[in-house]
Image 1 (tube, one colour):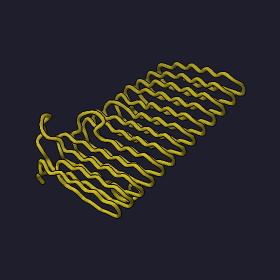
Image 2 (cartoon, rainbow, N blue to C red):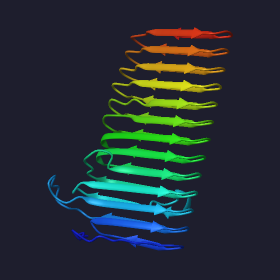
Image 3 (cartoon, one colour):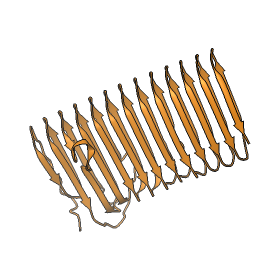
Image 4 (tube, rainbow, N blue to C red):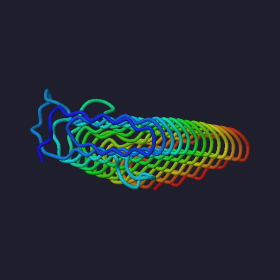
Length: 311
């Protein structure tokens, strides 16, 4: 399907409005509650870095609005098989909103071209990318009880950045068979959970920063060339669990607070691990099997114990 080059769709809904748009340049703005918006862009165009972009921009202000199906059951922005350069931007301000973006077989260039920004409570964001090029992803949520999910597969020059500010937030990032860069998760508040899986990605490495109490972070990297990982948690009751398999693994875990637990398992070539915990009742377990072995654990406080297994 050949896409129109200059059509712009603009929709303003006050209540229970629904708009589905399709063109090479889409802009949708909705204000009110219970609105639904969707944008579909499908078609092959010759790649031209100086040519027009395939763009989708949806802005919603209000509560219980949807970019896609409720609860991110379906993507509101769907972009597939286009080489003209792609951007997808969703902005929502309110409570109970959800947004989904799916990109499949597209060329994305520029910085922060795929993003979901949500302000409010109880919002849901989901981004899925497959077979894309130069595809940075940004999810920015501010409020309480928000959920973010990012999945990237079979893509090159990928990166994912998620930021959540509030209470009880959850982030899940999955990258498989990608090239360069890794996810970056930043959470500020209480009860945050971050789970990152990076599988067969070159230069993979999540950077997770959590500030608050009862935070939990779990990352898994497999068969990953230049592995690197930095995890910092500040508060009490934090838990960190890291497993890396393959190649150049490097890990740095720092927890400041009480009742922190850090467990690191690295299997493969050039291992290195540094775990520092400051507080009381901290526990550190490090297991490395294969080649480089370096482990440095520094715990300050009372009730700390360390178990290191290197072969």
